[in-house]
Length: 102
Image (tube, rainbow, N blue to C red; front, side, top):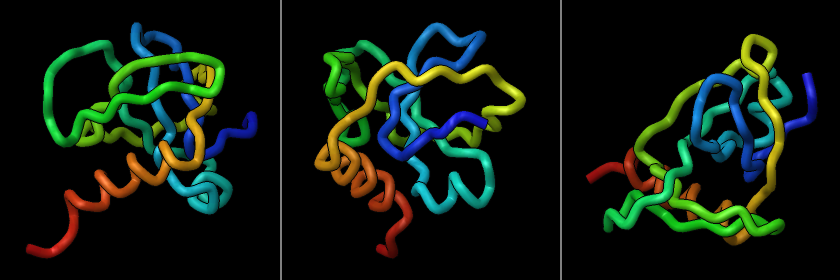
């Protein structure tokens, strides 16, 4: 398996859009899998849709409530870009907020 990290923007073979890896790095190392959320180009305003810009200029909106577990050995995955640490924190906070107690 190639090295993948939280915050990587990837292309998954067979899909038209890009994805953001949202799993913690320890999860990725232990399980050899990772969770992703899709990155789309949309103007839909929703607290769970977060705009990102990768360090190499990739732009889009992460749909945080759509989370999928990916096995990169079973699917061809390629790194395209990555977001900075503050972007990772912003996305992680939004996702964590879906599961907090009321």
